[in-house]
Image (cartoon, rainbow, N blue to C red; front, side):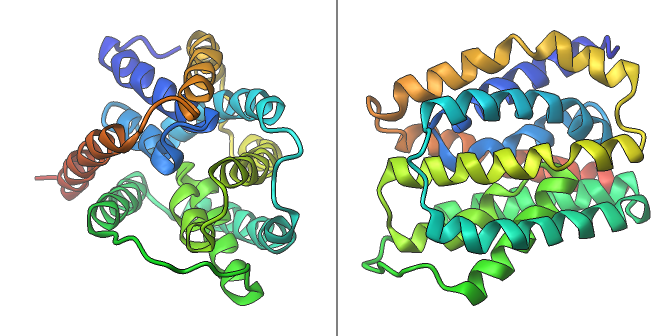
Amino acid sequence: MIVDPYFYLAATLAVLIVGMAKGGFGGGIAVVGVPLMAMVVSPFQAAAVMLPILMVMDVLAMRAYWNRWDWRNLRILLPAAMLGTLLGFATARAISADGLRVLVAVVALVYAVQYFRRRSGDRNRPPRPGPGLLWGATAGFTSFSIHAGGPPLQAFLLPQRMHRTTFQATSVLFFFVVNWSKVGPYYWLGQWTTDNLLTSLVLLPLAPVGVFLGRYLHDRVDDELFFRVVHASLFVIGVKLLYDASGV
């Protein structure tokens, strides 16, 4: 089991923030989880520790948003995500720890910059199969590698300007399927070690706390300030991970 106190400081923040996102407060800021933990341990280990916690969070979130998702989108996204997950599995051993740090950093930086540069628009598009297949596969790949499927999924769903709860429920079911599909591949890659599973078990009680907070705040709090703080932090984390990967 991991014993570094700095890891548990980072992991506690990561699990609570990811849980709040799963519960409906903060949306795609779940992407902050692995980058936070990867500042202390390798991205491979961070992803392995997070997966069982994400699976429990998905089950809790499914109860909260049951049958409120949009099947039109999911019929396009889920098959594509399975292809992306297979690609992530096929390339997992070819990516070094520093290479994965760079990938985590790039996702973090792009997502943070995109948030601060975004502009509201009047688009209201129905789901289109072509972009859906592209973004679904990308979400499956980045989710398998670093649990960062949120940004690609949002790139497809947000322009549709669907109801906030429908958007959250669709995201919840999408990641329920994707995360549970990783169980076999993670076992094959040797990620289910005793150390990783015990560490997940220690952090697991935080999962329902985060999901409950997210669900409670979903309809009660304007999350704009929260978004800004988390995305600014995500930018700093991305820069730090790029520095670590450079070996300077």
